[in-house]
Structures are given as C-alpha cells and as structure tokens.
Length: 222
Length: 411
Image (cartoon, rainbow over all chains, first blue to last red; front, side, top):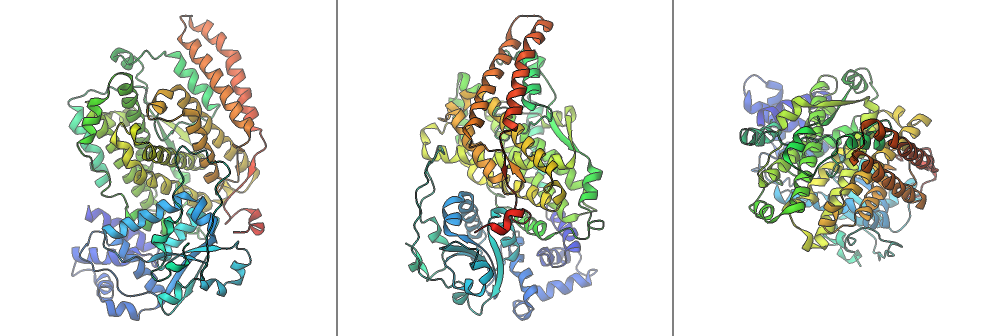
C-alpha cells in the first residue's frame, strides 16, 4: 500500500511543484531508493530539519504546513510546533457560516476528530468579527455583519472550503503572532429561528462553534 | 490497491458459498445513492421496463428470471483526457484540484468502516417483510457504490498521463466507493447473502454519458446521496427507537465522502466553464435536476415500507432531500428547478399516481399488446407532467466564481 501511495504522489508532485505532496513523497521515495535519488534526498534533509523549515520562504512554509496532513502513515512525526505566519481565510456573515450551512459544522468536527486521531496541533479556527478584516475594505463593504471567518494556516484546505461553501469571500494575510492573527471584536450572536423547519431532525445546537474559537477569545461567544 | 482489496475480499469469501442471487440490481430504487438517470424521460422508460416483468415477491425463481444487468456508467474517455490535459489546457485552474487532492489524501474515514457484532445480531432479529426490504436496500446501495467505484477507477487510470492530479483524485474516490460497497456487502453477509461484484462487473451493461452529462449526473448523484444519508442519520439520532440496523450509525462520516466527491465534480465543471455558462447548460442543468428528483421520488414512493420502517414519512423525506440538494446544486449549476414552488410537489404527486397505474397495468394478466395500449395514455400523461414541471420558471443560480449576478451579492 505504501509503495503505490508514494508512486502516485510522485506524479502529482511532478505537475504541481508547490503542492504539498512533495516532502512526503521525497521522504518515502528516499527510503526506498536511498542512494540513487539525490535530488529527493535533498528534499528530505531540508524538510526533516525543523530549523531549515522555519527559515524558508513563506511559500515554502505553506507547503510545509500542509505536508503534515499527508504524513499520515508516520505517526511518530511530532506535531509541527513551528507557527506559520501566513493565514488564509474565507468569510461571510455569521448566519450563513454558523446557522444555515449545517454541513459546514460537520466538516469542522470531522477535521477536529481527524486532528485528534493523528495527534496534530489544530491549525484552523473560527473567528467572530475578526479584526484582520480592517485590512480588507473591498471585502468588508460587501459583507453583512456580524461576520465570521474560517482561518487556517493550511492554504489548500481553505481553497477547498471556498469550493464547498462558495458563497464566501476569501483572502490571506500575514501576522506576527497567533493572537494578532485571530483577534476579534466582541460581538453577540443571535439567530432567528427558521420560519419553517421541515427537516425530519432537529437543527444543530446553537453555539456548536465555540469549540473552534481561538483560545483566549471565548468572551466573544454568547 | 487497498481499495481493491476491500472489494475483492467479500467476493472471494462469499462467491464460493453463494451463487449470484441478486438480479434486478439495475435500478437502485431504495438505495441511498440513486444512480439511475435515463436520459429520455427517465421515469417513464424506467418504470415501463419494470412493469414488463412483474416482480413477484422475492421468491428465488422470480429473482433469477428478472436477472437484469445492472446499470453502470461509461463515458468518452478520450474526450475526458482532452478536457483535462494540462498540455492542451495550459490555463486549467489546478488550485482547486490540488486542494481536493489534499482532502482526499487526508482520508478522514480510513478507520471508520469497522464492523462489530451488533450487525449480525440486528440482522438476526429482522424478520419477514422488513428483512426483505433491508436486503434489497443493502443490495441496491452496494450496487450503486460499486458502479461509482468502476467509473472512478477507470477515469483514474485513463487520466494518469494527461492530468495526474485529477487522475489521483479519481483513484482516491474509487477507494472510498470500494470501501462503501465492501461495507454494504459485508452487511449482506449478516443476512447470509453476498453480492457477487465480480459477476456484476462482467455482466455489466453500460449507460453511456458524454463527459458533460457525467458531470451533471454524478454531481447530483453524490450530493443527493449526501443529503439522503445525513437526513437518515440525523433523523435516527433524534429517534433512536427506529435504529434497527447499525449501518445507519456510520452514515454521518460516510456521507462526508459523498459530499466531497460532489465537490470534486463541482471543481471539474468550474474548470470547464463552457458546461456552465450558456443557455444550453441551463437547459441541461434543469433537465438533470428533474430526472434525478423525479426518479428518486417515484422509486421511493414505491418503497415506502423501507422509509416507514425507519420512522420516516417517505414524501416528506424526499422533499426535504430534494430541496436541500437543489439548494446545494444552485452553488454550481447555472439554473435549477424551483422546487419550493408548490406546483412542483403537486406535479410530483400526480406523477406518483400515474406511475402507480402504470405499474398496475404491468401486473394485470393482459397480453403484451393490450398492456402496451393501456400504457399509452398513461405514458403521455406522465410525459406531459414532466414537461410541465420542467417548464416551471427556473431559478437562476451558479457558483459565485462564475455567475454574473456575483457583483450584486452581499456575503
């Protein structure tokens, strides 16, 4: 299984050199052919070294940030402690994000479960009325408030979430610290009950998103 | 590889014990992923064929007599290769594919499909009609998942050279489908049965769809599959007294796979905007919505016992699934049906009545010619209902990355 997996990853990496598959592939292939794949070995040494990672350019960091999710087979890999300073987001009004799109909640908990299973440090958050929006006047003028952003250091995942949610605006920004990146303005959320609820099941509970608020910003919840 | 293993195991394990018992796997009427959409007046031709061979209540000879080849999909693989050839289409936006590949590689459900002894115990408790309904449900669902496996597997193989990213996604989706099919087939073993997937593969009869139609049809199939699974899951979570077989407990995670598969078809269509941005695309979008919704509604209304057996009102369940699927589909198709217009449901219900009469004609003792004569006015009535439903003023829709109305949107 490993063999076939790494081979197909190679193909992907060959086409999209910035794709996240590279390092995983490099490592796996290098293990299989330690002496003949010099260029791949190069990849391995630069990536297996955490210090080298943190010094690399931001685009390279993006690749690294997403590599972890591909290194599923190597459970011994310690959670990536290095904090990328580039953040990707999708944003829309709170009602859309937290109340109407119930599949969104399912995706969030699925990912959280997955991170738990793989012992991965969480790199995605929900930010209610994020302060970073001040940097995006083009977005804020089209946004109903209160707004909620899904923020992650994993760029491709945010691309996926944009594809899924569609009715969201997206962008990216840099921040020196996590606190700064995920800072929010205090807000009270309130959703009106849907006029007619015809589903043969109850709605997801109000407040499900609290699990995903960045630590320390819980005061912004209701 | 792992995917194939999962598939092969149940076959080799059971095919020696059980002969292929399941015929009529053609129309997964009570499966969770209705995959049958015939192009021309789907409901009519579908029901007409069914009616020709009256299905006596499951009795082994009857099953053998109605042994029809299952409907699997095939497409123009050369055209697919051209569409996604990164050499020819240098501007092909690969970002979404790369993002999806990461999602599929993450493999959220790698360890999800593990059975326990509850399955066999629950199956042993089921008796009489409920047992039959369940067997049929498992069999049809398994066939539907398996048909997805075959199509995706082949696409993964064929696109490997021209677009390795898209090809790998197809392969990973076939992994999911194989897992689902294998899991359902193991469910059948609880009832001392097994679907011979190897036999199905060989006996398959392909429905050919051009790539653009594969996109519309498969997108809808995956998304409607998601809504069916999640609705059943959430309903049973709220009403556990109807939880009569543990497979439903797996649906929450399971259907996230379906939803992601749908997202991939969304990305495929966005990469080929010519399938989304003209008047023809709008007509086809509405047509596929209509065939999928009507096929599901008519099929489910013939199998109310299953839905009632798990505590659902069939029509309410279907309408909920249709409305939600339509709302999802409006994020990509340039036009969708106005399913919340009361006229839509009224016409669906009339089609159910006509269809019941059609089935009744098939069950009479008349000779073939008489039956066919009796069918003519009914088929005409059904066709006119279909057309009228199709012509209900549609809802303009589409992805905000493409749609013209995007500039007016407030997010």
